[in-house]
Length: 265
Image (cartoon, rainbow, N blue to C red):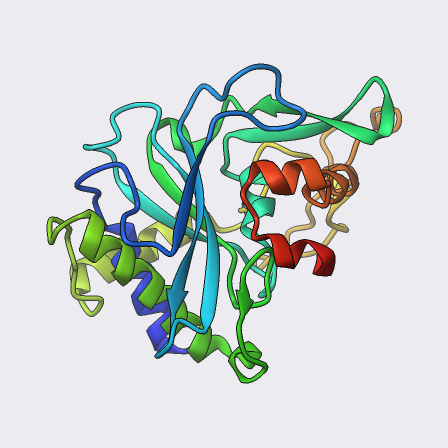
């Protein structure tokens, strides 16, 4: 991963919103309700596309969740899902987003959305971005524009953020020098404190995703109690339901996915 990408992330950590909407995008829609969720959404959800590249040949799809606390004062976070190639949708329902997804009583082909009580959107405005191009609902208008790399992905993500911030924040945001020594020292301290913690699911058992391994201090990780729960539900089990939900035409219509993409998903 090149330095440009990490510089981008350091910039994002200290980016603050001026107003609550993302302006100047190719399309944007306010989503009031979604299949699988009972009633209207209790927060503001916006989806849309932002064109980047010389001729806007790369169309990046995003989900924007407005902070439930104080949108104008709370920070704006651009959440870049790992992979590369994992959709922002996975963060929306499996990680820091406002939803969790479960099967409802009617079985595998029907899912239910529930509110995530630990969502970061309770205290921050978050953009979940489908990147690099070709991920999730993001797409390109030419074959050549689908070619990507860490460097190109960082560049398109930065251009996406810049386009949104210039129109939305009107210059009222912090752009901290990534070579700031104090900032880097603080980051190193945070990284040390988080060593050994599963960054993805800090409250979930390691049994679903990890095998017993030795850490840097040669200490064997083990369970405290030899008595394991019967058939613990692994986090990955919900991936199936998320896949079904995200590929449902009613859901895609509700999220305002561009029509000609639907046959290709």
